[in-house]
Length: 449
Image 1 (cartoon, rainbow, N blue to C red):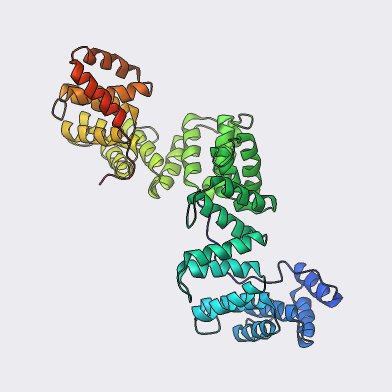
Image 2 (tube, rainbow, N blue to C red; image 1 turned 180 degrees about the vertical axis):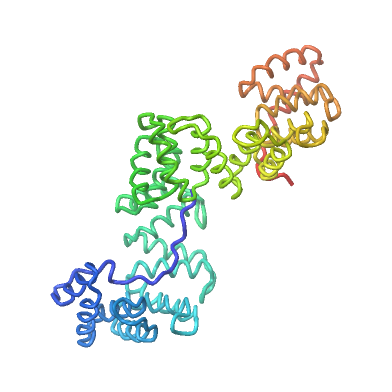
């Protein structure tokens, strides 16, 4: 999970106006809310002429976006400037947005930052958050991670959900402060309880993973459900996964397929892959290998290693596609080069058997070694076999025993059998060396260099 940075945008009072005793202001706002933009513009214009800064801001937004009035960036700029001079932080925020984007004025990050600072110091949480972004990126101000963190914290403490989510993300990742998943959960929960969908998704993820909080898939499903109602693709995908597994909710593959489909249409790669798997097996949805392949292609084309590997399997078997070893090798290689161990193991198999590629025991052993080093227990067994038999590399029985032992620890029954047989042929010193190598072994991650 990677929560998005809040992007500075032109937002205004129209969407969330403060409580007003002024009936004329309320009437203009109500007209806007019901889509009567002409009446809203007339009402705000009368109030703006009387010096109402909030009305100036709203009228400026209507000019900026061409709502009922002709789009006029200069008029919007003038109204925001006038309202800002009268002390409206909302106007200063919108004016900063115009300077940031070069809308109606020459782009000027420094001026935008000064306007945001004035609004932030007046307590405007959106401006605090935007100013944090400016400090993080060095827009018109010194690049300063501490200053960015300070403004995010002030905005979060003021109750602004996007800042609470960003502060939670920083605690979750240990970015700019000590990693603290408990604090991350606390900030996500505050924003989630205020109805912010991204926070609901992030909180669901923390509960799902048991990070910073006791794992609770039932509560995770609740938060995923709320975020899913807002169309968050990751929430739809993760809720589908819980329904498919019957984890935290009653098992329901039909509902899982429905949720995966919604998330897949929104571009979620895991959902595209999971929906394809259901289609391949006819679980929760009609069996449809051709559609499954189409979804796998979408995810594989965007670099999703699981989809690339599954697509390789289908090409190797000729399921849903014409059998094509060369194409299978291409997809396995793409995922393998990204560091995906199952694809490395499958590519090694193709080299060992000469399927889609020239038979090459040395290349097969090389890819098995990469996969074994990344913790794939099947590859560990196969690599141990290669070392024991000298298939594609130099015989190394101590090394073979180490890999058998690691695979056996992960439950590979054949590794237990081969390990016992091999151990019976080795000296005590060799056994001690193999045991020491097992203790010292650590998996590696990342792409193949």
